Image 1 (spheres, rainbow, N blue to C red):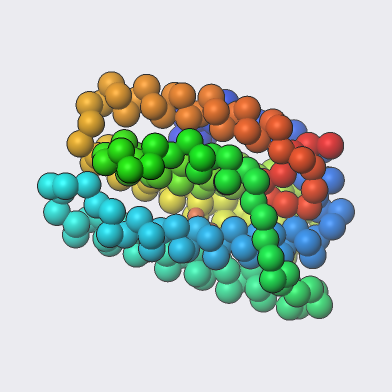
Image 2 (tube, rainbow, N blue to C red):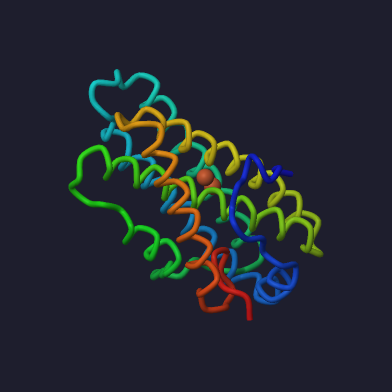
Length: 204
Ligand SMILES: [Fe+2]
Ligand SMILES: [Fe+2]
């Protein structure tokens, strides 16, 4: 499992959150499937936003790999849902991600790109942390194994988004200051989420 240094989130999810969300496994899987879909489209959206004058080879390869992983995760979660006679809902809301995305400084050139990458890293990082908590608490060994695997994959994505953020043409100091501010904001946002069977929900 990830170390605190690899995953520098300001707050840890308590084990009781997992017990709460695992009580409704099908809505939880449906929410999860949408998160994977959104993660895939987000990686594809970022694909052509490489910061000038960085040559795009590394950028495109990394984001294409994330998109491929997320589509694979979507397939795994869709299979879990189908095996349990669950179905994907048509509509999905993710107030946690919406609140984080509001912090993106739209239209501000490299700052816009930096914020998109750091917000992506935060969503990956929190999802990664949540999968570890779910893996530890899941009474279903098949699910626990899959959550553990996803934990590792999302950790890799977290690290990739952090690494890509270092390519944005802004000073190291500015990037670090923004990262710290967004980590603080994330802690507040996750703490104020409503509870419910979602990967990125609050604690009842
Ligand atoms: Fe994923
Ligand atoms: Fe991911």
